[in-house]
Image (cartoon, each protein chain N blue to C red):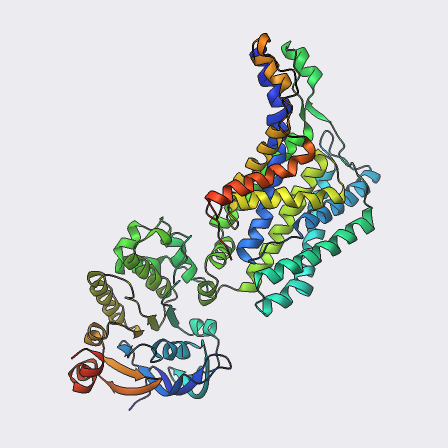
Length: 237
Length: 336
């Protein structure tokens, strides 16, 4: 198999001096594809994603982006390398306007950002209408759009989303997933952690089921949805 | 005529002094609120930073005066002010480098930083007294009044005089300019926006590639400028005495908290609320009331609600009332 675009290869690690949370966990995503990490509560889903983004110590294994070893880079340096990250909570600047949020997302860029901002507004038209409003005043779904838009402002090659649909209504969730597919179509790889396993696997090219920090099942979204073991344990039959 | 006299007396003794005092408090509170919003602690050394900045400005003023430099009707201190600000900037950056950074790297709790700032306060306090002495210094020169009470009476034929001191005029004008410049910087410039972002959500700001060291440095530079300007305006208007500046910490903190810590707009509103209430409650209203009330109701006492000795109590009562009903201040500040 050719080298994957972004791979967290047999990662073992934990926070600070604490115990290992991940055990030889492998997560990867191809260029322009959607990879989804699912699993029960406390399975280390978000931890696996944070490990790939450099927010905890990877004691064994490696993280490679486009063939380059980035295991020891800080999260900020990974942003410059083309990784975008949307945390699960506190992922917007609530006291600043939508436009300022996007502007801050592009802080590391030195070239003009107007075009990227237009693209974000095209993807999320509602944000264009609310550009001058404080992001903290928006609804849950709109806030998530701001958060994703902010991360897109650096023109990342891979976008990592930590439970983007947490706390939004099912209708808004479907819409967010549609938008995420649209983002992937522009050639950006998507890696996301999802609580809503079934819907997430439906749109996933690749799915990872983690249990207690280890890979339990890996396959395409369809394979996992069809797997009786996965269905029984995680999808409720 | 009596009604006009009442208005003039009110302006002369209450409105104009409170306006000037409010501007000085607002500038001081802006510095406190910036530190709180961005560095996330209450800086008790702020009053003494003001004292240091004022002292530096006074030393430059004396030097310029000895060289015969002056601004005509305006005080020489205005030329010295930029130099005073620069010296203060060096001092606060030095303090940050040798004291605060140590605790920031360790991610010390805000309460630890508060105690650290009290230590810094005592050192600055001693340093200022060591250099300029604990006594009163008057350094205002130039024209004393924009309009003096006697001129006003001659001009209008009213019994009451209205005096506007040059320093009061300068205070208000400078405060307006400084506030406009500060808000422009925070809301329009890239660095200013990155400071707001850092204050709003530190982790996300780091993720967005905002350099925390730069944000902290710019904050200190702004705070040094604000503290020095506030201190010099206060010193020109009244006089400079290190102990008074230490005491100013109380109304300044009250202003920042009433407005909502971390919120610049709140700091300004808070400054004026505290200043006006302080002056309103400690002013003897006999004269004003004497003009507007009919003779039979004329008050025999001074109608002063509180002696000026208790003026600091006023700040605290207002603080208490506001915090009881709006715990994060009138303009929704934040709490760390």
